[in-house]
Image (cartoon, rainbow, N blue to C red; front, side, top):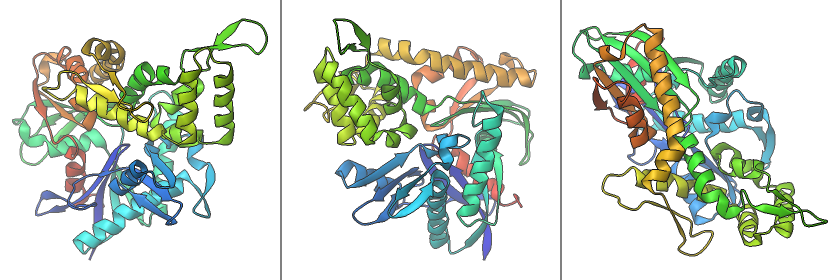
Length: 416
């Protein structure tokens, strides 16, 4: 039996599902979990590619290999077609994404007993909000990934529209709902009307390239990178003058998708040169250690965990645990600092929600419910940015990590 598989290929997590008796049925891709980390690990010793939690576990164990996460962010950029040698093969990042999607396909087929020749895939409203050329190319790239993964045909549904379909029942007929989908790499919005029966009317969809990994990046630059020498004075080779350490290496180290590109001899050599002339040489020594021991993703996970801790009710003193830099070291995340650093990003998200309403010529007072989905929608600063703009709307939290795949599973029944 062949069919269509609904796939939510996310920046941070992925999931798959089908429609059974008119209802979404999610297919476990890793043990019994409904979602799987969008991560790969090329194990140099076993000479195999691991995906999902197994990839993250291999990284945290210190296995010899190369870890990659956030690959969706490379779609539409020149980096996506850069090739490199991995496990004795030359492959580009389209190949890597395709292999991940092939794993999703194979595991879904093994669990369901079906053969999936077609896919209904989620997509951001805009992959790149400031560059139409990159935005269009990203969809071309993702289509090619599905083809390389073995799907005969793929169609796409805007991710917040899938979440709207899955959450239609929280509205009464005639009500207006605004889906706020804060993913790992983008924030997307769909304004829709509950039509009664099984239908919804999409009034507008809007997207901006700001997501959870941007919040991680902002926190990393604010709290972690100064411990590695960001902003530190560097002496000139001759004389007593100094200049500030270049930001590029620190910005890349704080960006999930760019971390694997830093583990080169040229980058390590540049870091050692900075350490040699650094006024605070111990800080730059930490940078060298991170590059030589390939600890960039360990730091990124620590920042992400600190962000989650800071948004967990009842946690009084959230911290980023950086024991990989210094034994038992922690970096506090006080509320005032979090608000100051992250509010500009949250306000971009709030402004994008306003744009979605403006496109449909709908006023804030007309919105009945704001439906939050996506892992980063749980952040208090994001909720504050939306509730101040839509004070009359009732807040509804959908299934944060599965609302999109629920809608895709429902849509898969009639996608082709």
